[in-house]
Amino acid sequence: VEAEIAFILKEDLKGPNVTALDVIKATDYVLPAIEVVDSRISDWKIQLADTIADNASSAFYVLGGKPAKIEDVNLELIGMVLSKNGEIVNTGVGAATLGNPSQCVSWLANRLADFDISLRAGEIILSGALSAAIDAHEGDSFIARFAHLGEVSVRF
Image (cartoon, rainbow, N blue to C red; front, side, top):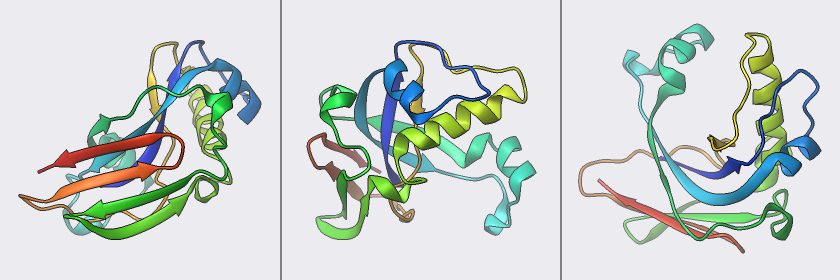
């Protein structure tokens, strides 16, 4: 699992030249999220083409907390603590995602422009992990707590 920040868009974003400020303006609200990472590629011997074919190795995601206005959250400095079965296993900060999670969303919008694809209003965009992924097994419980954003949890 990976702890991430989810951006819910209120406006379309189409690159090229989308900036982090454009992302902030186009975002309705943000939420804490846990992405469940899974790959069909054995032993994680994966390259970019494999990642694309594998839907970015994403199985599903869980959203939590209450919607927060993006202007009420310092995305660069937001702290995160990830617990597994009641023990802290990881910590992270928004700056771990290309300096700011909104920068990750702008990167995605600009990269998708190469394929004439835009991010659409109403879509949920995960901005990338604030720390390393942690293995999950049957019976494991995870809670990701984000400063000023709330928490999200999942049990396997």
